[in-house]
Image (cartoon, rainbow, N blue to C red; front, side):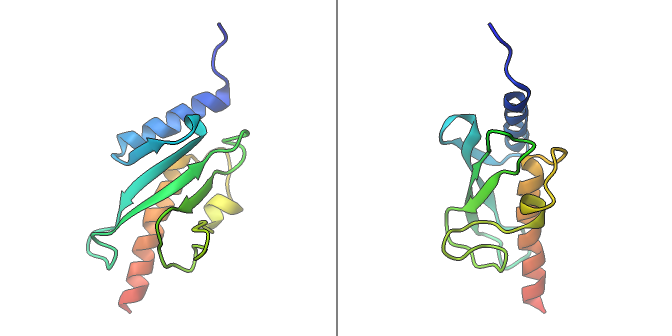
Length: 121
């Protein structure tokens, strides 16, 4: 019996980290495609909101960045209005194998908090 590849072990570890951080993770197609549900940050206009993002981990993950897109509508300058694709440097340009799925999810909740602060101005 062969042991799992380093990439598969990394996928397993990253998904477990999301679950441990109390995100609701729904597997779609194997370990490389899943949905993550997260809630709007408290004390912001997003409070009470619930969003789902679809995550697709490429074959060469973690050396290639995941594809992340919102399933439900969210209006934000870093999200494509039609496709729901997330356009953040940490995902698209600055990705390194040092990042993991929890970095991506943290970026999503961070940008919603930053956007909420901008809306308050």
